[in-house]
Image (tube, rainbow, N blue to C red):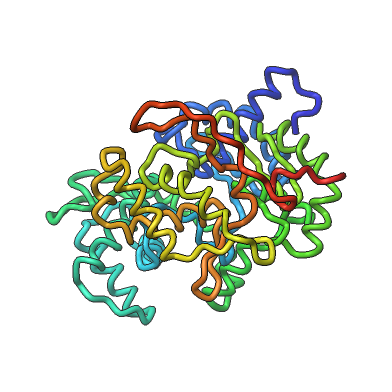
Amino acid sequence: MVDGLSDIDAANVVRCARTLLRRPLLRADGPDGELLTLVYRHRVALQDLFARRLGYRLVVERRFARLYKAGPGADDSRGVPGMSPRGYAYVALTMAVLTGIGRQTLLSRLVSDVRAAAVEAGIEVVDDVVDRRALTAALRHLVSLGVLHETEGTVDSRTEALITVDTDLLGQLLTGPVAEASSPERLVELANRPGPRGVEHAVRRKLVENPVVLHADLTAEQSEWLRRNQRKESVVLETSFGLRTEARAEGVLAADPEDYLTDLYFPGTSTVARIALLALPELLSEDPVAGRHPVPRPRLVELCARLVEDYPAAWSKQFTDEVERLADEVLELLRRMGLAACSDGSWSLAAAAHRWTPEPDGDPERGVERPVAAPEVPSWSLFDEENV
């Protein structure tokens, strides 16, 4: 790991580790590709760090580095933005087709082979707008990963295109043991297996990969391990990956001060993020049930409509005319943050959401500053330090 290294080398190892967490498939011609040389230089230390801390395997070549993370299991909150379930199915089918298609192919042949593979897999194929968008999204994703190269034309055009396949990268994509899986569900389960150190690796992976880790979402064994080791884990996460932790009664938040490892920003500048932030105080005023605040959807729709009406010029027009959709997007953002959950059609907020409750310092419409009392924090909220 970083023990025994000079301060400069240790800092570079941490920098490379952070880059690989953000870019698990790091290419010389891709984002942050300039760091690949540094990753190659420190590959032994990095391989040891990831193996010990997270139970991850790291492959480093001259052209690329591949960090094999654990799969998300049943958690679908951190997927590729805009990728539908059908799009993911097409990603898998395209990868299967590419293994036998050679280094170059025409787009029309690739599309035909992928749809044929879908039929063979028992997936109904209807050549409509939704299907074409899903297939295009899958191909664009593989282009972004560097597996496909648009040699002539583009994959989202209606005209013919020549596609080049990077077979070396293609062979590095899958992390799950396909040969051991008897079904898709089993493959997802196997890809999400804990590392060699069991509970330690399982919990630390959650801390590194998720904005908020709640004890309620952990098994009893994992929760007990985290409570017992949370002080030590704070040191491990900061020295290894540059993360700062906040440990409270309900769970642990791991934040990146530089926002580099953050692929989901909250609070943020988008209409959805700002509406979600402004809606939190009223949503959290609901009396908690089993430590969670109920979120009646009609009330959220009403809150969104009121905020849109009060300051119509502050929001994106694509949402101001569709308040129902805006409410859905707010719930989805909070869910992906680990703050909201849906059970049997009913939504609720975790007590951890109190951390983001805004404290306005004036009326943005009139420019008049008014003293605002800090909201009273219940004794069970995330603000309460846990006695350890």
